[in-house]
Image 1 (cartoon, rainbow, N blue to C red):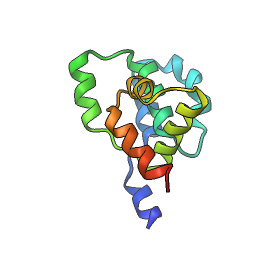
Image 2 (cartoon, helix red, strand yellow):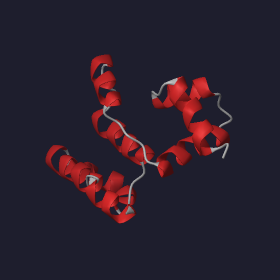
Image 3 (cartoon, rainbow, N blue to C red):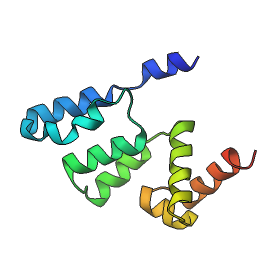
Image 4 (spheres, one colour):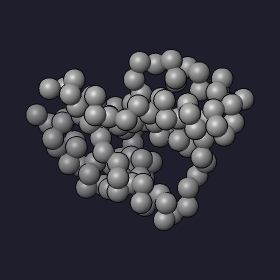
Length: 113
């Protein structure tokens, strides 16, 4: 079942590679390490997007946030980031542009089993 879900996900490495190739091929070397990985996590995808496009305005950011989805591995990675950086739910939510309620729900679902 996991393989079917994995096949439905976009190939972000190819998408971002093509964007870089079209916009600024000289920067491809900057992302070489990320492009060589077998898969990219949500955090890595967000990092690449930030580096390529810079900071988006509020309306674009709000639109993009509504269309994000996270699998369990991504959620664990985000919660691990919180633990590693000793962040509160509010700090984590602000950092990743999430709702505090979402962070609390994730912790309830995934950490307190």
